[in-house]
Length: 370
Image (tube, rainbow, N blue to C red; front, side, top):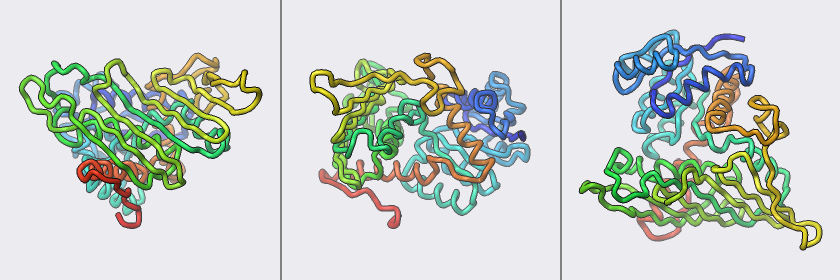
């Protein structure tokens, strides 16, 4: 085992999750690299000091530049606003440091493309954080699909729906301004990533994007509250994706349903330790969806708990990401999803915006034309 110095940019909601993950990943997974919480930067030096004390970092930095340039920091985790992702990643990669970046990859398609170029030119390990697809249940769903358990897939429906802005009387905040902070920039990337992981590349989209509450407290809202996309996957099936931050009653509505010629799969993140599987076999009278509770036989469950049905949680998804990042650094082999996988998500989002603006089907930009 060897220590590896971790530099964290951002100490809020996701910063805390990554700090906790790095502090515990060695005990959970027995990784060859054991993280050392070396340096942290946040919105101000005072905030960084507060987070240093709370999370156990050795030092607090006055700026993210100080963290990137710190010789004791050997890998960077970016958990700051997406408008900062590109500059931090480019600087870290230029300094020869592997980078884990929270989703979305950047605040724009140009950011995402530039970050991929910087990562691949540097030869450094790079990953982007799509944590929800790492639940044992969804990893098992990927296995079932790869094994052909439900036959040829014919249709996919996915959603990422929450209600944190469902109340029209809530005041405007940072989420209600700027294209990158709307639902298409914030929630949609998670479900687009899920669709790509389960179904493969998306060829074209037809999207509608709307602002349900155009003003909050007298302040104009200039980004989207919800959006939907009809999609055609490159391997043939059609699908539908829906994203909303105004879906009253939905707290973590990251859900999908997949139909095939021999069965179907259902999943809902609000019940993240269960996967529903239908097999079209046996007498019709006894057919039905079977609820599968995750347990030690499912991917990445056993390191957390030996008891079936006891369940894993949100923080465990981040710990799994940390394991993948550290293993990638240790053996120099990329782990999904890399920056290029994050760019694939950004391309679908960009095609969605173009489709909504033009009122027609739009092809997703092919990789060779990027």
